[in-house]
Amino acid sequence: MVEKKPAYGSDLIVDLLKAFTIEYVALNPGASFRGLHDSLVNYGGNKAPEIVLCCHEEIAVSMAFGYARVTGKPMAAIVHNIVGLQHATMGIYNAWSSRVPVLVLGGTGPMDTSQRRSGADWVHTALVQAEQVRNYVKWDDQPASIASIPESFIRAYRLAVAEPQAPVYLCYDAALQESRMTEEIPLPDLSRYPAPLPLQSSEEGFEKTVRWLLEAKWPVIVADCVGRTEQGFHALLELTELLAIPVLDRGGRLNFPFLHPLNLTGAEGAVLARADLVLALDVADLFGALSERKNDSSDRIPLPLLSPDARVIHVSVKNLLIKSWAQDYDKLAQVDLAIQAETRIFLPELLGRLKDEKRALEKMGAEIEQRRAQIQTIRSELQAALAEETKQKWDEKPISMARLATEMAQALKGEDWVLTHSSSGLKEKHFLDCRHFNQFVGRRWHGGVGVGLPISLGAALALKHSGKLCVGVQPDGDFLFGPSALWTASHYDIPLLMIVFNNRSYYNDEEHQRVVALDRHRPVENRTVGIRLERPEVNFATLAQAYDIQSFGPVTEPGELGDALKRALRALKDTGRPVLLDVIMQNR
Image (cartoon, rainbow, N blue to C red; front, side, top):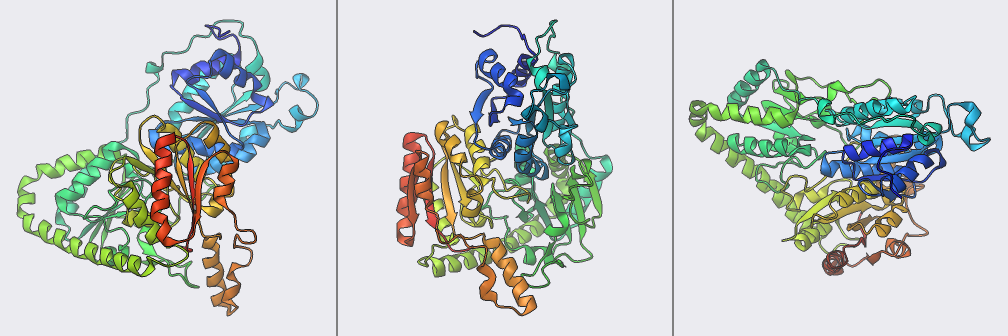
């Protein structure tokens, strides 16, 4: 029987989850939050939030990562004291390094030692448990009383979603969860605890940016995570078209339509070499974006792509969330103007100010059109090179990425689709007509592998009732870190087409071993030892069937790929359930 008012500490936590409209909580069950589990089911009715059972805590947190990427708001993941938190750490670190808001809730054995059961309650209790993740969460807390739970939760939520966003961790004493409430604790009026207004640039920042953009002969925009907001996405598109500025998309989100005439991603060397101004927008690794590494023994020493005379403007809030332990802030890049502002409000204001410069824009009309023509020439050369590569590799075995991406584009034509995960090289950006806000949820910023599948599941869960077709390219090695995510996909009927990029290798490390072997004059052919996923070769289609998921493949013949993709998409649309397509691929 569902009670109308909270009777236990854990009931109050459920009320707070509901107050912030948390739709789902992903978890692997554990005794340290048995009180909260009961409250979710018997007090909260297992609705808004609904429990999503996962077979590993890293999967739970990673699903919350994917959900947040699509919705822009957190999903909760609940982890079991020390041991569950340790399982979850990779997912939490990925969320941290990619600046994604996740509410990680955890239980711990009673801090009052007189209430602990012998054995597990001791081994699974830490002082302080958050030390495990404190260096890569934005904030953590462990409320000491039921009365302190609301303020702690409100602060955690507001900090998680404030820019720059990041995961937070709240730890709840098991005894506190199970304690009866002795007095009524009303929920505060959340409207009196609003999210902070977005950070805007100073007048100097706008004045210089406008003037430098109008003075530049070859301005270039480098964008990484602008596309996390709809305002930023649309303002960037309009800005580039107004001044004919080429865009280099780093892929942290979908910042710019893949096939737009001004998108010169893939031609970074030619574009940056002639740039006299770079407008960098939410770029996580600006130094890396403006340099290149050779795939040889010197690959640790980047070479600059930009002229020393070129100006650089960087608009970002990254510096507001830097810690010493995780050095994910990258090498310090030289800039001429650093603007601490959120691109979702900076770009629309910048666009408005540029439009007001009517006389200057009229005077620049011929120059802008000339630049547009030059951009088209570079893009045509890029497309011609890709077309030639595709032609040469069309019938190659194993199947090439160019063929897979071309066939995907054909199969998805006319559909309302979202790319939930990409191949490691994001080759898809040259072939798929990805043009709408949030149509690609973006690559995670380095971090660790093994989370591509649950991130895709979290995104597909968020879009389950949207009518959109969710498609994710899943590298085989990454997939094998957590194949039990297939159980969650199947049990909850999460509609996702998983295209397994099966090259039977952790190939990235083959390249590293080749570089080292060449540098040391050792046999390059040994680069695959300890890296190839052979003997046995994993049959991912059979693996999916074990979880009652319809599957196709392994596809080995290039000529059969297009039909297999169409059949897999048809199964996804007909059943509304997960589908897997196993494709035997070339290395890259």
